[in-house]
Image 1 (cartoon, rainbow, N blue to C red):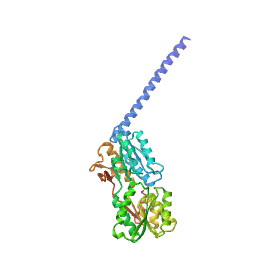
Image 2: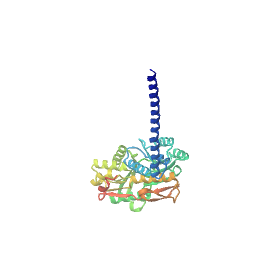
Image 3: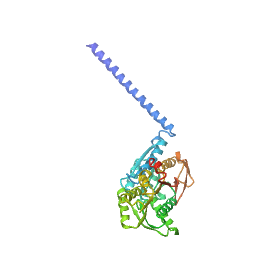
Image 4: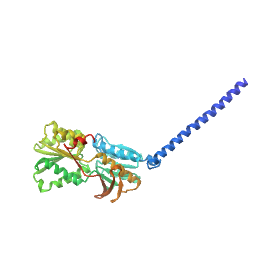
Length: 360
């Protein structure tokens, strides 16, 4: 009996020692993995703290292919830099919905907020709050006012976009007739700026036989853009051309003109995604349209965000940054603020749409 008790005691001691050894053994691989994580961060040009940086982007609304491509480009840049990308967009294109997302990102203590604004001024209190807490803020595509951001990333020169669209529709309709504009939201800063330049271009005497009859707003929603196009055609039976400086709007207008058999009777141009507009260009409903690469807009914004975080730029005119595959970019003046310009708009027509429709 005593031998049994002694044997049991020995077994208990041995079991305890084994458990302690096992616990100590589990700690070693955990520490090794932690060290490997630090090495991976170092290989990407940062340290363990850098690897945890969070760069957020807020687009105007969900269900917008153009916005999805912009966010894709932003994510590509941020992950190329070795950080975490947070992609957000509200269901509806309203300032109120974006304000809620800004507040959420502030509470998450992100390093950057990049935003394509639904309103130039309404976001100011929320964005200033973010900047006051050390979060870097920039706008892209659709700007917020200069007090609400450090820099804006612009897809192309607004004057050249506006004037080019009028020149294009004028050529299509033979220099005379009624035209209408199908825009996004009435508060969209980029749309409104382009429209102002369209109106300035129309002041030239060579457009004296062209009349702008209406600026309609489809709010970058497919169904509403379809309804607004149908309303234009009903209200203006002599309408000769539609300019839609929004990817959602131009695709919606293309569908309406196709369904109603108005090819050649009402001309269509604007800013569209090649993947969405290929069928209308190939059918002749839209002879040509323009755009830049929205992926590159987001990509440039990701590198601009990183430069703001690292302090290599502050948003001051004359600052320069290297934006990955896009090369060197310079911060230039933009009214009361500053901006980084991507490049000129590109013309898509029957000669090149096939090669671009599979790209974006």
